[in-house]
Image (cartoon, rainbow, N blue to C red; front, side, top):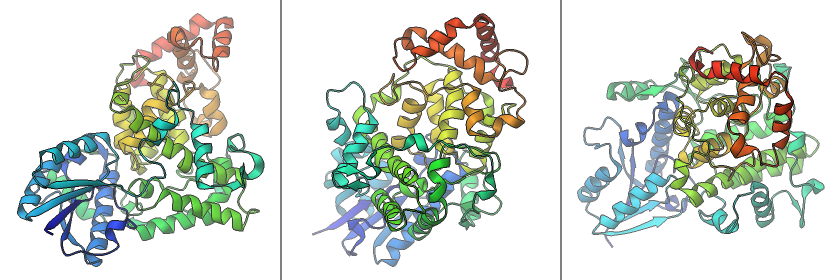
Length: 509
C-alpha cells in the first residue's frame, strides 16, 4: 500500500474530521509553523501565538489518538519556512507514496498546493475540510447571471435547506429577519456579565517569535493568552455564550461602550475559523436552547446570531470563491491614501477611534460595528487604499483569515467592489456613533459641529465623501436623499473646506 502523507494547515484543526476517527500505521500527518504564514502581513502577536498554541494542542490530540505526526516548530533548524519546500523534504524523508491535503480556505494556499501537486511524481488527492455548510461554488451557482449577490435570498435558501428556525415551510415568528429589533444602544454596562477567561502561559511561544525575529503588532496581556486553544475550551465558550450572553446579544449586538470590550458578543470566531467548532453545531446549539426556553431567549436575538453564521459567514466565503483572485484588486473609488499613523498606535483625539483601535491592539478583537462603522467608516471617508485597509484588518484581528476578511473589508466596509456585497457604502457622520455608543461624550471633538476647530471629523468627511464621489453614487436609489440634503446646505462650501483641511492632515486628528 505504501505510506501516505496528510497535510493539516493551521486553520484546519477539525477534531471531528473523518480523517481522525481511526489511526493508521501507514498514514503520517504533517503540521508546520512557518515564516511563510507569519510574514505575509504583520500579524497581531496574540493571533500568531493563538494559532501556534491551538496547533500544538491539536498535535497533542493527534498523538494521544495514536496518529503518527511530524510537527515542525518555527525554530526547528530543519524547517525551511516554506510550505512546498518542507513538503518536498518530508515526502523524501518518509518515503511517501501518496499525498493528501484538506481543501484550503485561502486562494494563495489553494493555488500553491495545486501547483505543487502537479509537480509531484507520486499520487495526490484533495479532501473536503468537512466544516462549511455550503460548497465553495454554491453561491456562484445560486446567483448565476446576477450583477449583485443579495445575502438575504442566500440566507433564506439555507434556512429552508437545513431546516433552521423553520416552522414547516415558514420561518419561526413569521419573519425571516429581525434585524430592526437588534439595534439597541447601551448606557448601563453594569449588567454585562464577567467574561469567561482562558489564560494560557504562552511565554515560550512569545520568546520563540522574538528569537526568530518575527515582526508583530499589538501586545500580549501579562496574564497570558485569553482565547480558547482546543475543542474543549471552545465548547465551554459556546455554552457560556448560550447560557449567559445570548439572552441579551440581539438587542445590543450593534452597541459600543468604552467600559466593556466584548459586551454580549460570543468571541467564537477564532474557534470557528480554526475549525475547532463546526458552524452547524453552533447553530443547532443556539436553536436548541431557544426551543427549550423561548421566554429566556428572544427570537430576534437568536435569529440575528444564527444569521451571522448561517447567512453572513457562508455568504462571505461564497463571494470569496466566486470572485477571487480579481476581488483582491478591486478599488471602485480609486482610493490611494495610506492608513493614518494612529491605526498602529491608537493615539488620536477621536475617542471612538482611540477606543476601537486601542481595543484591537490590546485584545486582537473588535466586534462587527466597531470594525464597520468606526475604523472602516473612517478609512472609507478618508480615502484609504483598500490594500492598506485589507492588510491592517487581516493582521490585527485574531479571527482574520483572508476568505472572511477581504470580503468584509474590501466589500462590505470599503465598497471597493462597487456594490457586489453592499447595496450602498456604509458610512456615517458622528450621529450614528453617538447613538450606538458612549464614545462621543468624552471626545475632544464636538459630535454636533460640522465646522470649526473642534468639529467632529466624521461630520465634514461624510459630506465630502459623497460630494467627491457624486458621479459614482448619485444614481444609487438608496442614497439619493443624501445629495438632496447636501445641495440644500447653506454652508456646504464651508463643510467641504473643513473636510479638505482634515484630509490634508489626517495624522494629527
